[in-house]
Amino acid sequence: MSRPLHLLSLNVNGINNPIKRTKILQYLKKQSADIVFLQESHLFSAEADKLLNLWRSGCYAPSSNKKNGVIILYSSKLAASLIATDSDAHGRWSYCHISINNSPLLLFNLYAPNHDDPAFFSRDLCSFT
Image (cartoon, rainbow, N blue to C red; front, side, top):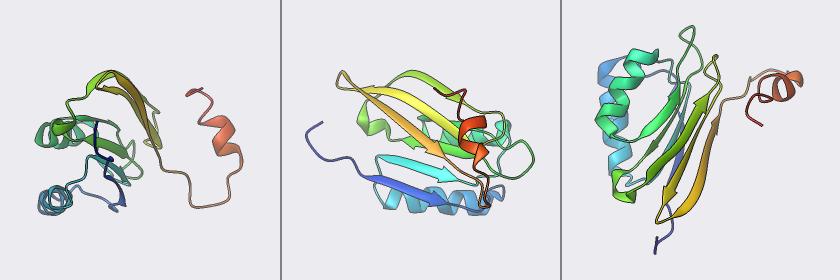
């Protein structure tokens, strides 16, 4: 890729409302972001799938209880190939391993607890390593 990637990270504080979800997508497109990291989507799998269908490329860790939920979206303009994806069961992290012009890129989105939980990183991220 001959230009720098435009990355954007947003805590969306829930996008279950279709109107809010549409407005967020319009905002993201206006920003011309290549890669977007969304935290606190609060979306279950079915709704996250709908969002990915609208954006066309990405991966997610769905919410398990209308809390948490992370999503990674990447622009179809990148002509990226998806190599692998994984996420945790609690909607706290997700990764997409993609390739752009034969260059591998690992995208990782993490929504850590907002309270003191030192064990989170060893307990919940151990399955990633």
